[in-house]
Image (cartoon, one colour):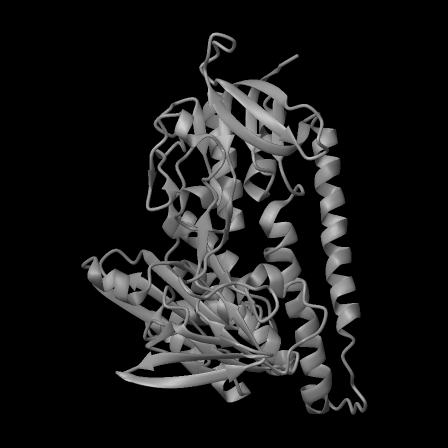
Length: 475
């Protein structure tokens, strides 16, 4: 017998399960359909496992190569990569159990299988149509009748034509996370956020790393100053970075290793390594979910939605990576909450994407919120900037991590903060102060007037804010 729900969510990733929790809080009968594991890409193939590996890489690199700087003499430092992977998996498992517990607490029904929209019929007059669930356990399909549907099917790694993922020598981040042993060398195609995180991690594990990026700079969506500083620091560590390079996929050769050529300023250059990691973005999961049975519009591979996350069919919403935009876990969660609150008739506020923090969890870390300097100028703002180095921050020197800076961009006419960009120790934690400042329409003067405790890394925010008007104390 078909089960009726107020909301059925296709996809139990960070966006989907958070949306389900909020729906349950609002008293809506809710179900999630998930073909994999609750938590989705972020928990099992992205955010959490990669950051666990990054932390192990950081500890290993510090113990092996830098401990003497702190007066700690070590010898015979070795890496047990199986233990690294075991630690990673234990963290994932603990969080997975937590998500499962939240579903039980909220009395949210979870269907383990693949959901497909069938649309309304004489058997299901509900405007939400019917969701057919092909169960993973092989049992008879479940039929769900929702009043509303939320698509939260996420995304998967993209690749380039001709770069066949064989999962042994040529990998995406999905396969790289499951490596049982580290290669001696690797080529990373793509110098965006994910590519740079992997480059940093693998280098700190002792792998020889080469990054090949098509654009003229790495992490090209970030402020130019951040890109330049990241490249300088990573190259100083020993990572080879090649920009303005077009990989010629037809030249790929795989034979107990990888060889490929790239066109750089009109000339061909060959690269060799034990393995290759393809990191060129992600594509939305829009296939095999029944979109063809609806009036939903898909453009450039992404589901099109309104500012309330409604598709062309008003009872069907879509959130997270499947709609493009900022493909970030915290964005998907916020979108899920917003969509559910709209369904419930609650007051909701459209997300302002320029007030969403973005993070790069490499070593060093980088983060940002708001416009880059180039974007602010393109939009006609009369800007002023302040920049302050971690080298003048006592806590950074204590940590032994003083590379990097904080840069604040403000409107010279209104004194509004337009963007904050940082690279250096714990930048991904420090960015939240900047995000709150933008939400509250704070001025640089207000940040600078906030008494930041000493000695802390947070002092750099106050100094950078004062620097906007030439009033930094320790510069």
